[in-house]
Length: 315
Image (cartoon, rainbow, N blue to C red):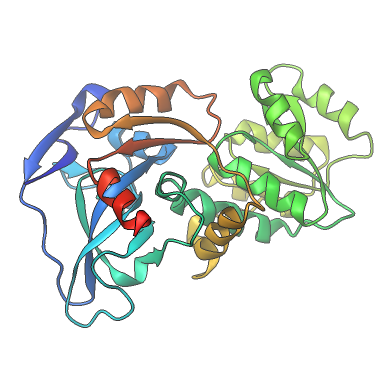
């Protein structure tokens, strides 16, 4: 038997519970993964509280997307994967579980040197950060603002903009300022007075921005003088379009983007810390941490397969 996080009704954290069920079987073109780590993202909370469109699953539903683990079953027609391979990927509504079945095209091999924990929270943030930075095209002549720069997407996006040579300013709570400075990112407190503080740090203006916050922040960036076409707003909703901003999220990523970020992390050219790790049975505490915010990196759920995966890594 395996375990899976489910909810029967939309609502708050108390709707989450863990059930036991037989592991699913891999069909044509699919692989089954024994999950080691599953990452939490803000969208997981939005889905639980009552998402809309593709983010509104039929109930009862599982939750989560990002995962890492060990392949333990390969379906007919699959090439390039074998039982025992260490992998990472994404599977919407399925990741927070002991086992999941996913199309083999949605999975990548774990690069040597990349931890399963880091890999377990990577798929959404890596794809979103790469697509967003590609959309705003930072260059050495640019001053780039990234909001939520200590969170998952913001942290990777700020480092990618910095790697492109841009001068990068990132908003974050004060306890994360030293961390950002260590990455070559200039920190700024968010909240009341942020625009005045930003003006002091960028007296000649900001030429591009990746916004991870609401529509009010996008309005503020436009009023600050950032060209709307060079703002990518990943969490502001369709109203950002009315302001002329882009809304390029993970759906705008290219097939190799996740693998490239994973390789960069394995080499140490990008940094992506873990905020906290909870056992699968402590899923409500994990979501409470997610709701609280002020994260530095990712929140992860851990399953019993961590020991199994460690055995694979030891060879």
